[in-house]
Amino acid sequence: MNIKLSCLGMLQVFLLWLPVQAATIGDASGQPTVIQVGPERAIKTIAAAAGSSGARAVIEVDAGSYVGDVAVWALDELTLRAVGGRVKLVAAGVAAEGKGIWVMRGGQMTVEGFEFSGATVPDHNGAGIRLEKGTLTVRNCVFLDNENGILTGSNPDIVLKIENSEFAWNGYGDGLTHNLYVGAIASLSVTGSYFHHARVGHLLKSRAAVNHIFYNRLTDEAGGQASYELEFANGGVAYVVGNVIEQSARTQNPNIVSYGVEGYKWPKNELYLVNNTLIDNRPRDGVFLRIKPGGVTVKAINNLLVGHGGFESAGPGDYRNNFTVERSELADAAKSDYRLKRRSRLVGKALGPGSANGISLQPEFQYMHRASMKALAGKRQSPGALQPP
Picture 1 (cartoon, rainbow, N blue to C red):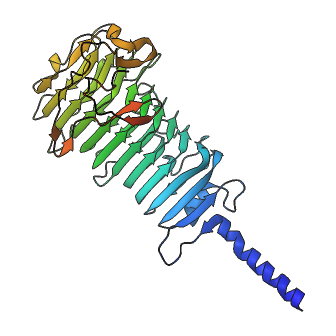
Picture 2 (cartoon, rainbow, N blue to C red):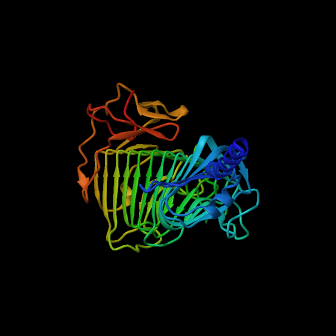
Picture 3 (cartoon, rainbow, N blue to C red):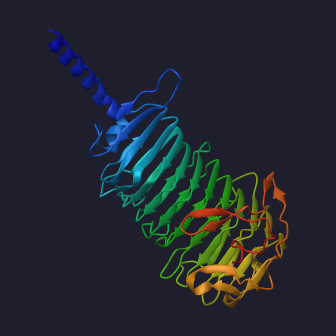
């Protein structure tokens, strides 16, 4: 009898143990639910996890490829995290709600360690992520070969934050789809990220009310045919600090940074362009900065311009300590090393840029390839995005 009861008890424990592999429910302390997804887990697909989880969930997905495994996320306090390496989400002709690989319209959401590729839909507007509502942080992710890398709605409550991520070869090729396409949302923040080789569209296009574009590399590079490298189509407040921004020789548009050209929609329109390195590889007629005339505040300080000309055609503004330089003044422009040479006449010549709206314009980091940042030392800084070796 004791043996039979013991065996029965073991069976009960085993049956209780199985669902724990899929979800560890938080205790009374309010810890989030953890759901594990993978080929060897009780929950094997991301779509199944999306259907079984609730708010305050952490979805941990085992590294590997998940083909046609699309999902809609409408949860608050949601974290989606790759475990053991990169999780590759391959659309393979499948799209959630006919929109993309993931459709997200929850509350606070975080995505870490995923690669989104191949999103296509009949209207040619498919996205790796379609963001329709909520606050989304995208960290250490890659978006490749989609019609849009990330596409947001125009919900004024949306907040999008992108950190240490890569966007490449996105776009249908019609000029209406982009590596990153942000609608009329509350705010966009992009830091430590790498944008390159958009298909005809822009490397980064935003209609957000407030934009923080700090310490990124937006470079169209050899063979690239992107249009604008950075566009704020409807103005707004844009802080553009410490970025390397390069236009290829085969670009579809001569403008590198564009502001307000589709008309001003926001009550406050201010552009702060500080300590960037802008490279124009067109043989002629390239434009570093295009600004639509209107009630806009422009401050451009400590920028390095590599190519021909300067900011002469940009319109009224505070333009100080910007330098047009030859490629020979850079460490190794042919290999995309756009740092000033150690003995350059400009080393240590940066001015203090001050602040705007309580936001410091003084660079504290610089971009590190690939898709990361490093803190700057305390020595006096030089113009441009990258400090000399």
